[in-house]
Length: 136
Image (cartoon, rainbow, N blue to C red):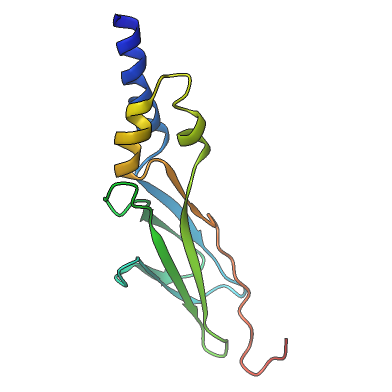
């Protein structure tokens, strides 16, 4: 009984340690030096700067199974502005990491609130900025 309880509890702790509530995302562009703004699903600016730069973004909205949806807007003088999406996708640790540890608490309670079950994709957005007036 004690072993079963330890396994259940370690399932939660394992995923919380492995899957954090935030993720470092490197924002890049070709050519570099574009100004970027990251907006969350509510349209609030959560990060801004110039490429290349790494920003720390939340992976959860804080609601039950509330994965993040962000927009990355890039602009640079003389180039057409670009908007990219960052989407939370279930990660392998969430899907498989809880199985050997009997981790129903990790699947249904801990990771579904803190975002540890998600990875923001793409992890390294690197769009090509087209010059204004260029033909594709």
